[in-house]
Amino acid sequence: MTRRALEALSALALVCPMTAVAQVGHPPQSSPYHDIHKGSSITFIGGYFMGNGGRAGVGPRDGYTFGARFDFHAARPLEFGLGVEYGALQRNIVDPTQPPGERVSGPVDQNVTFIEGLVTFNITGGKTWHGLAPFVSLIGGAAIGSSTPADRSGYNFGTKGFFAPTAGFRFFLGDRLHLRGEVRGNFWKLSYPPSFGAGTVPVTLDASEWNLSPWFGFGLGFIL
Image (cartoon, rainbow, N blue to C red; front, side, top):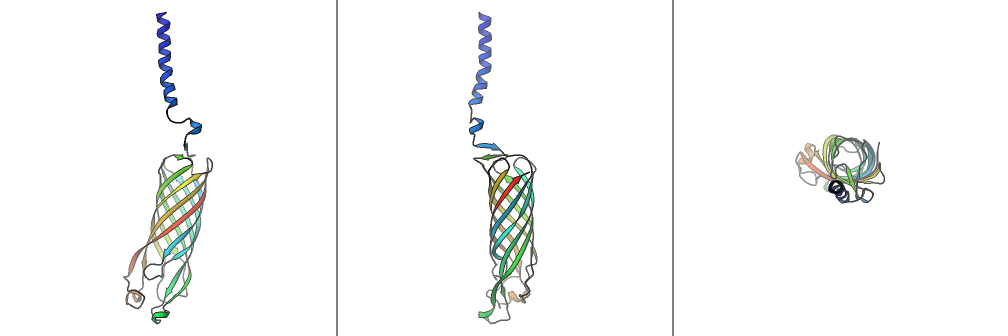
């Protein structure tokens, strides 16, 4: 009897911890956390760029953007990506040779193509919380502006390097399909011709200035 009792107690000692562990947290089917499917992803994204044109008002201003992005996973919380976006933006023209009340005209089209790379940190790692996966990113690359023949002041946006701290989220509609929302702070350096620093435009300017523009984006992505 003693031997049987000891065997029964040993079996109970093994079963109880396993039962206790199983009861900790949420049952898998009702847990708020779910694994993100492993794999690279492609996202089609559109947005709205809220430029202010800089102090002279000749830099890129408001307009819609659209493009595509490819992300691949380096580790559970870390992703790298490449993207191309096109901005149908506008800007004003300032002509220093005209009288004060006639110097500013426009807006005119100032289309900008963004070629970008990004590194993303997923805040919840390899899981979603109630379908949400928040993230922070740092985006950088080259912004290539279209020419504006109507501007004879000597100003040209040209090609600019840019960087953009970003925060956002993905909301998963299933294992692979997700919505994406993000907000960027887009930084680039605007450079002005000598005539813009001679007091003949609305404000006297330095040769260049850093400019910050908010940029909102929304997209639909799929994990391959």
